[in-house]
Length: 325
Image (cartoon, rainbow, N blue to C red; front, top):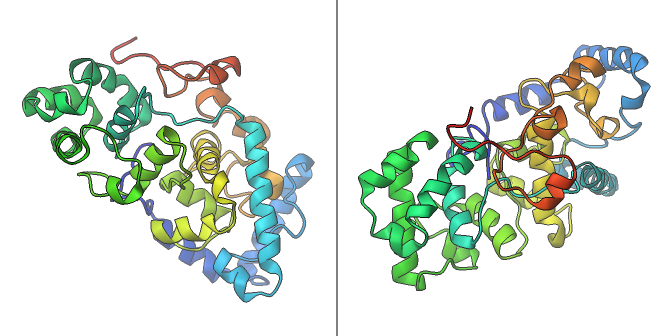
């Protein structure tokens, strides 16, 4: 479940490590820190509702928290409060890939690498209509599959992956998607991120989906300084009960797609700005920030052609099919 540029290869995010390094150089009390505080103070004077919470930045990461006696507790409390408030903002958060069974979710998640979930959702109806199960896809003509998958980009490599995993499902698992992490990651094109999407949303087994949005936000919130997806998964996971992991992933990813964007976060329209240590990195003017919002927060259609009823009830709009005006 990923947005543009999300992939197993690109999970560290463009410029992620460099951005962390630059931030680390700005020691508290230095000229850069004083300048940033002054800028935030000036912006806050115009919009008191987004004042960063006093004392909300005790440490820079979970690992740093352990080294500073007592500060880890503050980090855990702030992290869990952010998740609770995001749950109120996105009570209808869900996987943004259309699927009706574990096989469809597995294939769709593999296809979503380096493209949008919207593009995948517009493409998979034709794929699953012609090849409804792993037996069908494993025996398909590769050229015909490539033609269907062309809109997703990297269609030749993705064809090899989905046909390869379909063949493995037929030969090794009786045509059924396995419900264990160790089995899923053995399938062609399936890494931990894809496996946790499937486990959490098709089998109800908790997992953290570390895509580029998740990585970006948890570092902005100073939950971790890690850049390796597996280390991020472990460090952030330690801040929350395991039962919260799947919903936490949805909340963070939805917020990253809609409000806390990579290049220009909409700080002035952010419902958790008062908790965010990175407040001020983006647009703080409320009116200008409102114009940056995406998907249903900005009044635009979501990514699923067939979203859950709870999303529609909350005012969400389904995406248009491929080729629609």
